[in-house]
Image (cartoon, rainbow, N blue to C red; front, side, top):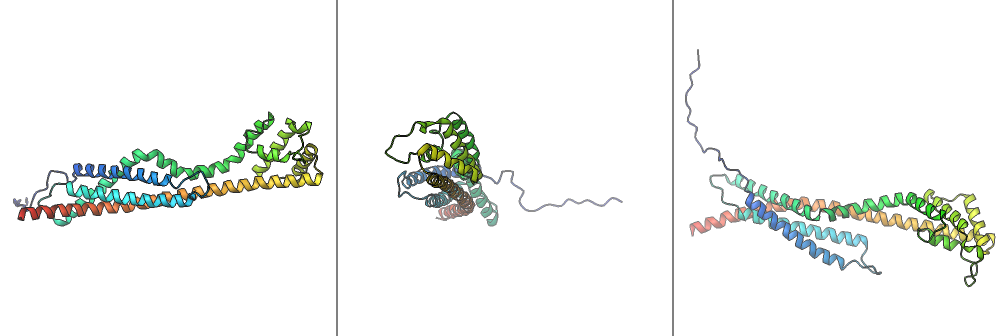
Length: 302
């Protein structure tokens, strides 16, 4: 026996065929936020360049990174607030919708405006942002690869007797300075073979982080024969030069580590500011939409 089927009249409103997303206000708010971001970034660049100087007394890398991170937070919050608020104010009034749904849509519209503005700004500043974040990694990798690269370059230069164009040239010159600074260099002072041997020893020692006793003794003999110093004084000069090379390596590592930490801090603070910016844009969108509806209601009653 077939069950009886009765027509039930459904009450309530039918589902709207129009989308709940108003792309016009979203795009307008995104463009406003992106434009404000560009303007504020240019202002920040101008202020930042006043902090950087090739002379002594300039701001440190840490100070510059912290200042840049703080300014990035300010830029993100201001632009996100403006974009979200404009998105809420520019949308049309939704009728026949519960207040909670209106609040959710305004919040979503503010978030979408922030997301679109972020993509627009990323397209403009993508290269600069990638270079900034990758600066620390590149500096650290350069220190790690510098020994091998320097070894190859210096060995090639040393084989041809040229040490003026590599980073160890100064230290090699320091090794073979005459004992009497006012005296003319002896005839063998410019011996390319001796200079190339010393260069290769210094490069290999810098790469390994230590100098063998045999290499140190051989360097002392070369210095003594070239400069006229006694064997003991030549050994002291070798120790001084090796200490200078080690100090230069440590300074390069410290600079690379500082750059790495500054880049990491900038990236983390930038990500945090973007998350907070998304929240601000969402709240501003809800605030702008509510104010728009309230102003219209007051106008209609007035």
